[in-house]
Length: 155
Ligand SMILES: [Zn+2]
Image (cartoon, rainbow, N blue to C red; front, side):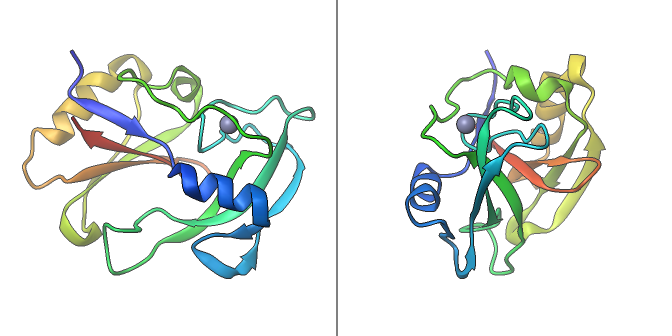
């Protein structure tokens, strides 16, 4: 029984970006469609892109929306066509092979700790971070380019 859930970006943000090609949280920032030239992953289904084949949209996303008064805008990718948003009580398989930092945050997005993901130990790394009452949520972040990937919440 896992005590956490990996949560992708909100479905409304993905569908609005696909429809309008605007970053829904930043109306002055365009979203750009194109062929995937990196592994992504898609921040909705949390699967890596088939590079050179999949079409994706690049948009600007604030991963602290509703969590902190200080936004944290950054680039993310989603599939250009509608995909099935990640919904499982397991850690997303496609993310296990990526370079990832777990960033545990307290209230108002105060960073409590940052640890490099150790794929075989991911469940205990997450339980370990959530063992502290101070930790409200964990962000998964690309350990090489720094982009936000997904949020981890207690269940
Ligand atoms: Zn997708």
